[in-house]
Length: 415
Image 1 (cartoon, rainbow, N blue to C red):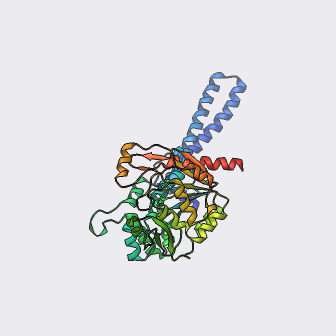
Image 2 (cartoon, helix red, strand yellow; image 1 turned 45 degrees about the horizontal axis):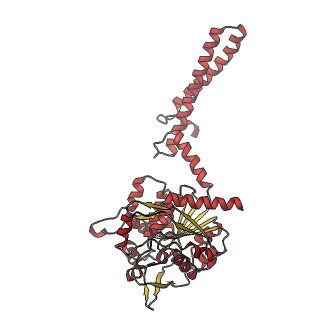
Image 3 (cartoon, rainbow, N blue to C red; image 1 turned 120 degrees about the vertical axis):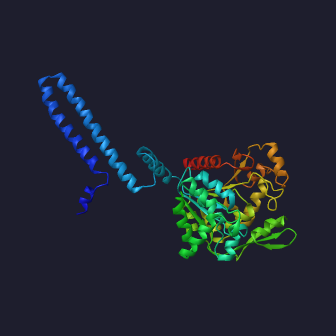
């Protein structure tokens, strides 16, 4: 009985099936006639038969194309693309699915910038994101609703999104007035989903489906943790926002509680990774909080993946004042393990003086590149132009991703 549904009115298939049948019939009749015509050496009839054959092929092609289009529209009702574009997109997704397994570790703007470049080369990207944010909308939602801070996770989801720009803009929309002032829609969406599902991790996965992301976004831990900083003057302060506001040189950071477990998915991703990237981003408040989790740190050290540390281009006021590139490296390995990385990526792209003057007003300066010191510690250094200078200094996602993938493929060829 189900086969009769194809005869229902309005399906849009019957007419093309009839056209295909007519075209095939015409081709068969013409083929038989052509054989008889050729045997009689009638050139005029042979030419007519050839024309009729071409016309029959055209009819069959048109019918099949429209039947396929009907099926595509039924299975993908939101698309306005033609069939060729859909096939191209399918092949592109297939290509990306064969890309290297990449784990990117960090938080804040730096990680989301990196992800937007990596997704152009592979859909096997896993972002492991810090959950120590205590400021702004994330901090309020964390305290009021007893959930993990969603802000950094939201930024990573949007960076990996493969959906319409309107949906991405919606997730990043921030209310500017009323009771929701300061909150972004994406933060509220993730919070609401975590309440509906009763599971913050599931809320992230469902949000990933809405944004059709290329890859995965995973919190480094599902436990509530706080970042604690000990400053060089002996003072100890808890809370990410409080630490950055203090503006004093940091001696060491730690997590509270110190023994929080990593998420299983994060450990699995690191274990299967072919490329592990740390940074760019805030050294003490975005990168290190993930690496302070013992399980994550040990998995990275044990991994055979190529491990890259992307050093920031500018110092960060209140965190890395007066730091050189080797100072960044020293802070990283003193908190973790010297075996946690293989290569340091350092930017050599010049920054316009007008932009440097503006950054100087907030006590932010270009990081001094002491390459020789890094090499003396046994690490490889890769220098390159990695910035996108458009009024502010930030890493260029495409330049950065290309440099990393080029270095990764050189390693695989040697191996």
